Image 1 (cartoon, rainbow, N blue to C red):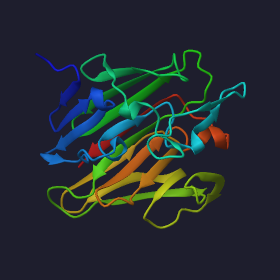
Image 2 (image 1 turned 90 degrees about the vertical axis):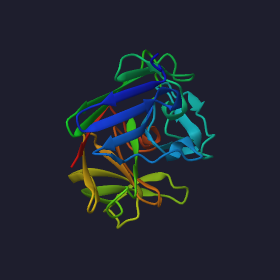
Image 3 (image 1 turned 30 degrees about the vertical axis):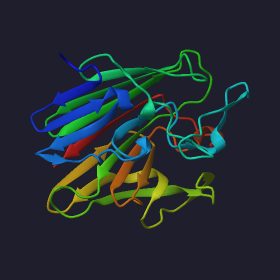
Image 4 (image 1 turned 45 degrees about the horizontal axis):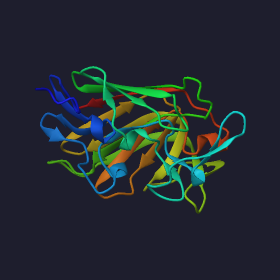
Length: 257
């Protein structure tokens, strides 16, 4: 009997396992026998590939206002005092097809809904996420949070490369101030925009992944010895409090070679 808590998507070159009960996250992605996904760690924020919805990144002190100015406190359980990465990554999603899932948002975002889909074609994975507000007037923006293993079963450690013109400056509270600077050297835990060359992750002697997306913002994270993250987002962390709006649809293609 099929397990409705899992999506198992097998292509010619790539096999994918998605655990719906653990945030509809990718728990395994293998290309030519190599495992690319960081495996379980104590915090659900720190492994797998998962969607960030209905907000991406942190919201400062968990506070956000709707269109009328009414203030709401979002969950700050994961890394106080800020709200982290939305509801999707720790919620159980409903299977809607062999490649897709759905999540009804809890209060205060109800009755909004998110829908996620994966598609495997040849050496690529297409990941898409759609948010439907259904009358909810609290700002929403979306993102993907893939944890790539820093070290594969062979080859050298991961190298992340990209070119962007601007990055958001962070304050002592790790939140963006709304000011911009030129990109700094690694290590990174930063939000970048105005890209001239989209990110790639290379494990010399083993593999390379090119990430393409029309997303205007990307968070790049390389401060963890176990994994690196390349995160397309429709708006940056704390976007609503910075006065930045984001689309309610995001998609990305991960191409392996």
